Image (cartoon, rainbow, N blue to C red; front, top):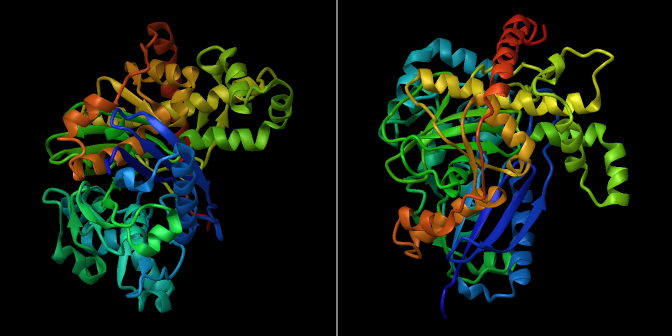
Length: 505
C-alpha cells in the first residue's frame, strides 16, 4: 500500500494538536485534545504526562476518522513538544510524578546554590545557557531534595516529545534540540558532558542517548496501535522542541531567518550556523542539522489574550451566541479602534514570572497609565503591545550578541490577528511574513518524519513543497516613532519596579 501521508503531533501547554498532512503540506484533518495545568503552590506549574498520552490517542483517532484514510497509508509520525519537562520514569516506563513544565519556578533556590558553588560562568561555558529554574536541570535536583521516594526509582528523565515517542514505540530517546534543557549538555558539541553532570549531581544514567531529530527511534507497537489507532510498524522519529519545529514549519532553515512565536508563550528563534550564546537569551540546536537557534522565550504570548478573554469577555461570549463572531475577534475589533500607543497605557506581560531577557521568576504583569478615559479596548490593545514590546526587547539583546533578525516569519494562533501582527511589525520595525500560522508547529514535526523516512529528500525540498506565505506586514514608520517612546517607558517601568518583584519574605 502507498504511504501517502505524515502525522505531526504537538504537545502544547494547554492542549495537544494532531494534524495529517499530504506531501504538499496541506492539512487533511486536524484535532486537539485538552488537558489541565496544575498549580498546587505559588510558582509551581505541572502536568500529568499520561494525560498528554490520553489526549494524543483520542486526537489521532479523530484525525484518521475525519480524513477517512487507512492508518497503513501514514508514512511516519513526528512529535514536537513544550520545553524543559522533567518526566521521571522507572524501569517499567511508569511515570513517577507530575512533571514541572516550562512555567514552573519552584527550583529557584537550587539554581542560586549551584550558580554559587559551580559558578555561573562555568555553567554557561558548557551549556550556552544561564541556569534558571524553568529549565530541566534544577527540576531533577528538586526531585532529589524534595521527593526522594520518586528520585530513588528514576530510570530515565524524558522530554515531552520523547515521552510520546516512548509511548508509541517503547523506545527511550533524547533528541538533539531538547538537549538545551540540561546544563550538562555541551552546546558546542551536542553531547552530554560527564564532568558537568558530576558537578551538578545529575547521574549520567538518567540521560538517554542523544539522537538527531529526524532519527527513526522505533515503530508503533501493538499496544500503542490499539490505544491510538495508528498501524503497527508505523515509523516514529525522535522529533524536537515545539519552537524549533514551528521554526522549521515556518520555513526557517537558513542562517539569519527568524521565527516569531505566537503560541501560549511568545518570543523568537533566529537560525544560526555558528555558536553564538548570550546569558540573557536561550540557545539550542535547531531540528535542522548543523544549525542552532538563538531564542527569546517569554511567558507572555498568546496566553495573555486567552487570560484576558477568560476573565473579562463575558459580554463578548454572550454576543457570540447572537452574532457568531468569536469573543477574541470581538476583542480584536475594539482594540483596533484605539490609537497606537494606547494613549499612554503600557502593559508588562509578565504573567508567570518572565524568562528572557530579564529572567525574573517573581516578575508580575502590570498595567501602567490607567485613568477614567481608558476603555476595555485600550486594555486589549495594551496587552497586544506589551507582548510585542517583549519581543523587541529579545530581538535587541540578540542583535547585541551578533544575531540580527531581518524578516520575521510569524506562527501560532496570534498570527491570525492582522492587528496584532501589524503591531509587532510596527514595534520591532521588522517586516513580518505569515505562513500557515496554525499548522506551522505540527507541520515542522511532520517534516521531520518525512525527511527521516525518506518521504522528502531533504529539508530544502520539504520546505519548498510545504511552506507558503499567506500575507505580509510592513512596519509603519509613523507608528514605529510612537512605539519607540512607548518602548522606553516599557523598559523604565521594569527597571523601576524590579526591586519590588522579588521573592516574598
